[in-house]
Length: 482
Image (cartoon, rainbow, N blue to C red; front, side, top):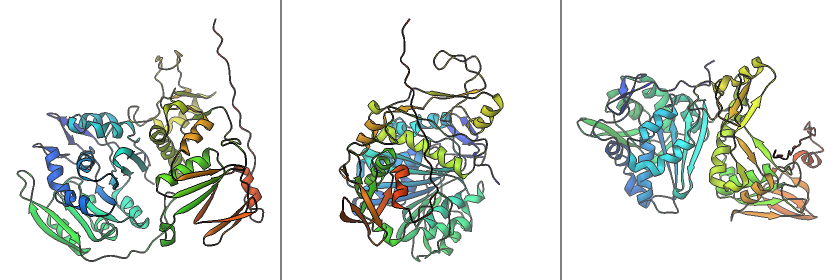
């Protein structure tokens, strides 16, 4: 089984430009990387005109995130061309992510893109397999970075019924990177396309032209960028209807009924309920939160503070990958959803009584100190609290604490969220739509989400859900000045 810890791209900088030692090729044109992206992918897919004419949601998918140039350039032109009510979803696949240092250096090549690259650098994920989301709220733009093998990533898009409007087929020349240009890649690309879907690629290799033609694309040649003779563009003319299959925990495929969902009821106004409500509201759903008490975050979320830090394990399985991605998403959402008044990134230390135990827990954080969201302090350093760290201590520089009640109040401050206090949900009927009884009155919703901690057991007495109460506590120590 392959390790979920990914190998970083091995880059050599030549005259200020990144050269891949993995694939013996350059990342972007020596002539003008920005103009190359505009000509090859944006104009190759006729995006500037399509953004003015097509629907409110536009989906781009890219094979090979690399330095992020194609994405950042797309954001630049999206910002100038698309209307405010349009949404951009950009999927990008990368198996060999750059280190954070190399990404920063690459972004310095394009000072005109700095206003977009700052957010990318701040939330750039660690090199662990998974799916990471970064948003640009003011642009209505979302980057979904799939850090994994290209075939696995495309199969994930296919099984989740993602429909792409335009493809950027990148990822080094076919002669340098054969894996990116095989039948197993072309087939899911076709499955994720419609008769309006276009593609553009820098290469004009025969195997690429034949591979795309075989899966239903109409392919034509176009003058290449700069000194390059030719490139390929095209559109799908024969749609595919794929069979769905089971996926891991990150599968989120929707049925037609799910896609028609408009209203959601959430039971419980603690951290779980308010966070879920905000995520659904950001997706455009209408949400009603029912809280039995007269205040939000009054139960299990009623502590004066809550510490956030990543859950570490000796090995990396699906469970630990989930928590790695959750931690990345938490840091992202704190930045974009709430004010700095409700959380403090003070940094946090995790200590253990034995060196062996802490070394095991640090197994997933040793890949690269500069790309990880957490590091093991080096002996002799004094980077927190003026304390001398040891090997049996891990420091999380991006961690800290939140004020749960203040956090929940800001999370539910959204036009798509309504909160009903002193509203006790008595019964749930799993009909279509779902029906709930609140204070002896019935309401119907497309979906119901239960976030009322161990009280959920009262709603499911007929089902076997093993539950147990876990005691939580917060200790407050006053600082005494000498």
